[in-house]
Length: 55
Picture 1 (cartoon, rainbow, N blue to C red):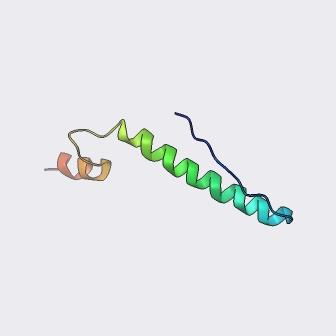
Picture 2 (picture 1 turned 180 degrees about the vertical axis):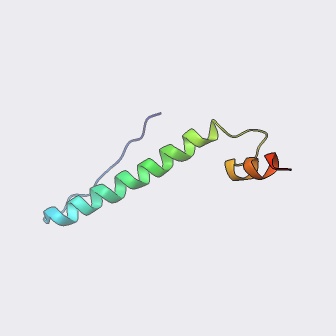
């Protein structure tokens, strides 16, 4: 998996740091979603699989 990001720079260090955090969090969310797809079975989401296994 490759994720490419663009971070808009600012004249403020704090603002740039906040932007970096936001962009990296978004990238992590996207990456985690893709990884979770590997564990999806029978077209059910992970939460649905737990519910189905209890029946």
